Length: 610
Image 1 (cartoon, one colour):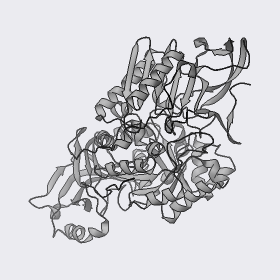
Image 2 (cartoon, helix red, strand yellow; image 1 turned 60 degrees about the horizontal axis):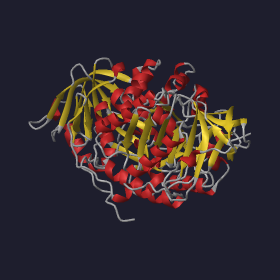
Image 3 (cartoon, helix red, strand yellow; image 1 turned 90 degrees about the vertical axis):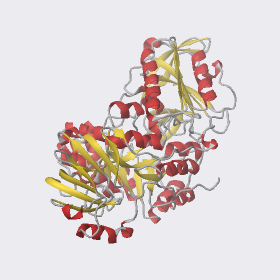
């Protein structure tokens, strides 16, 4: 792997130690501010107050002075922003996000979210890393460093997400690789979500070694624990040094994590709607919110365009009963403190980086008018005004779909244990708006020794075909809750977390055609119905598009429309379906090596038939 430049950054975020002399001189008035924001209502997330008629003086990338009167810092070249009638708040931070889930490359993600008030985030690039390994993470880090965002990246902990006996991934990352990645700079902030929680609890060398490498580097370990919150093994997990977890779906999940000293991340993604329940830990149980954070986890480009990003999540949390100032704390200072970067981001205070948003109207509406990042106005009235150079991904990130052979119709046949009649089969049951699935049993028809689908029972075939190493591995199972009414198929290389080629459908011929089209595009999504074919190319690792944000959102919406026309009316159906291969979330998933059952007793490959 060739050397990659990891120092490029146009929007500088200098260390505080480098700025002290100029900040103090500006605060005295001897050196004039580069920017002054005047006369707004300050959202002070430190004290939990809204303070009227406040102003902020900025020197370069950092805040020099906050007070009622900053006139002594104004000179002839100072950029003055009138904030009369507006709120001055810290830029919003996403405490757990996979950029790849938007299908946008990092620059386009930044263009999408900066006008919405998100000035930074903590990004787990384990999707691209499962395809390309550490070089994929390096590409995203390099691109992030040329944007105005405060982009803190995490070393992926689970490549693969669990044991190699259960799935095939494109790469392998262990303790040595984690240690290397964390040495790349201060913006490598910690270890990404440790999804192999059984491996941690039962002392697997790889997982313990990765956590040890992270702790030695003085950085944070993020979690992913899906056993019950009252399970005796959650304290075991916490004892390993895991101090944050986004797999909270109930108020009790939040309660148990906070009691153990962990940060509970309240998630509102495109397809995972958990805030309404988890926020009750504060609104009903009365828990202190200082260790609660608002996060998105996975948000589609469609959702960014139609609903928003962290501005939407904060607004939604307020609508569920949180005080506005509390919701802002959970998307700013709480998040910064969780990762130990509160000196730089998360508040509008002297010395901090000038990541500031100005909001119009009621604070509860989170209506972002202006976004300032690292002391520069980057967006106004919902539009980007800042520009930066285009990042081009190397060729080895663009040709990542390697099948052993073209996909054939017969690859989707399911041989039954009987010749004719009915047989009981394990079915993956999709759960709308949640990451978990259910394991159910249904009788399916058998003709000439093969399973025959019945759309009346809403049962489809699902297949996962290995696409990284040309092993020829493939497995086929059954899934319900998709909703296809007639002949239809969807094929995709977005299949968390190993991102093999996943195909779902009611017709073997259409499934084969969709799969081969995706392979020919070198990654992406294809839906084929009686009404035609819809394509969504994702050339970067089979996960992200090279197109601008608006084009990606339109193409993503096209996939949604095609699925709906076939009868799949799941909310954010593509994102929901893309998790059916994620073999660390209960109860039943499919990998290229078989049907995987996830229970309180562990993770095992199980038979399709009784």
